[in-house]
Image 1 (cartoon, rainbow, N blue to C red):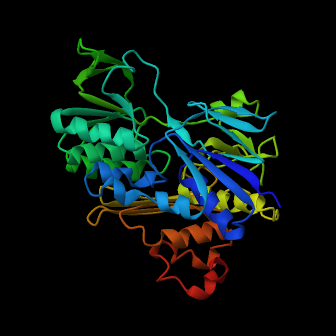
Image 2: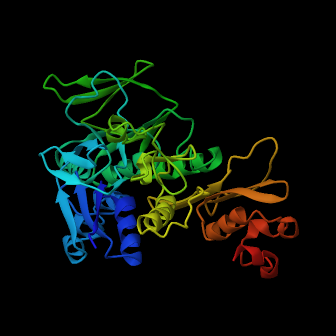
Length: 412
């Protein structure tokens, strides 16, 4: 029987995890070809920040080395960017002219950094923070330059700022929001984080908009100018103001997209031969950027590629567990709450601990933890279970070890 041809565009964590899951289910069904735009095998993007900080080397963050592709008979085409999907001929074409035919196509193109359109954004020394190449530029620049500005106070921005500070640069984080990590933390936790990072030597300009990047006269950035007229020096500007799903290929091929390539519960696009997974995909109106949901998608996608066909992806209740410069953070569910919700909070400035639990109709719907995330997993299970916490209410704030275990049997 002729093997089917599976082509994957993208060589990142979500796509390669799908291949790993597929090979567990069936390693005889497909001839697999993978196009990777970078010159590297699959690596852990989450660990780029320890590489930037000098705590790890690039070799340490490789997830699947070249031998893995060889041993699984996967044709790996590195440093080749796919420029066209021809759905009529069922083939993809790369920038070097390579053509690969497919019976099934998996689009795992991930996302690209959002580069805010402002004067000077194309100057030398202005980069995104997404891959090994960006990280290498930052490491090299830190050896000879002093002033770095990071635009964006989300997770990527803070990781870049911390790494550059550890490389010896003077770093300022510019953030349009009122507090750091506003998608992962509430205001109190965000302010606690800012104070801790300021104690480590980072500078912050919050609620601030960048108007332009100034040229040093040689085509490189020399300063950042704000809407209020202030100017600060910058030898390096890192844009960490968000990401955009990489949907251009799908759009050119006529696949419907809306903040991601639209997929159903089997991760299929409107063309049933073509699947999309990871940050480039939009499922029920959501494009996920966290690892856990992407790995859940990978299992379902692999199930269908293996022609088993019974798994469904119905979305993920997301949680975020972070470690920023040694500070543990966790949030899950609706941690902001609202007028229809009850919040229980604990703030201990001496130990640097903060907990906020959000309850709606006697059900835990959200949690935000700062400094001590030991009970994050337990709160996450409670949120997912949807069970009443009426009998746990008095002990809930004190965590799993204090709370009667018989009352949470549904969470196991």
